Image (cartoon, rainbow, N blue to C red; front, top):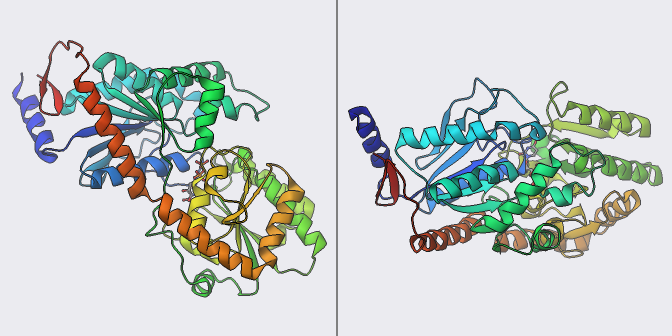
Length: 448
Ligand code: UDP
């Protein structure tokens, strides 16, 4: 063993003594990225929040993602025991999700090189999204890592509602099936996802339901008048809010058409549509923004619409609090973090009756559900929430309570932590794969 390597091992061990190191893999969802831009959304938030909460519970959490910008740091330390590690895999620039899979073998090689450099072999991998599952499956086979997988999006469901299918679909469906059948455990984020896994992917494999969460110390009920004052929103305006990426799958068009219908029916109503998220024109999601702007002009409601751009989680509670209703018109939504963020702030939600939204939103209690793309249905539901003040007060209270009781990141991390411990305990009873040049020391297997 060379001396430098030995010292590095010691440094790495001293950095997190007695902590079990685990790897979260998120191929395209960089946990350290700005959320809301291009393809950065719920997965980035999930991995980052889960990672930090797991570190608070005592794990050393290393989160791996593809380096997608040459200027980004290779390692971002979020908290003393939680960091993002950006691996070389393909060009150091933005690559659309459907074109990333070809770089996964390089991602795997970079991951292995990182393990060798740090003198760590992660005994547990939690992969996020199907491409990371492919990496996880290789690591499961090569180093007998325990593999936990969260899909975030299921090809079998997504491509039911997508007309033009990219070439990668067949590979994706195959990897998604292998992930379900071969992972030590799949984490479904809602009962609806479990049902889809069983009916559309495979009857084999272990699944546990652990929902997504939200930061209930940040997303909570605040003073509405204060929020409006800070955002410069007049008190009489009726604010209809959208928060999310600009992607046709998000159904912003349905919302825009529903608002236009309300405006036609009630021309004097002080309605304002606030769209949060998206990059400036010129980025990959700029096309959807231009398309939406075109529809707004065509329907004559451009003047009562505000494009707020990307807003960080530090300011988002103000937007949710100031809104009368938050609308989530997605064609398909595996979980939908925006729903629980809005509800945590006590904002009634009108959402598509799909995926995880069926689980988080309780119709008539915390908001309303409408069939996706049903413009009339959305218009009617938004109108009901705008015009019933006593009922909406009850909804505001119920919504915040539902999130506090069921969807905090701390609660989610406790459930994941328990799953990891059970998985690791199980791995002790499995025969080890002989590892040339590798010895086992404490909770790490270290290169010697
Ligand atoms: N988001 C944000 N700023 C924005 C737009 C979105 O922080 O300008 C966040 C939003 O708060 C949520 C995430 O992006 O945490 C979107 O997650 P969701 O599950 O709703 O949708 P996805 O992006 O995964 O499709």
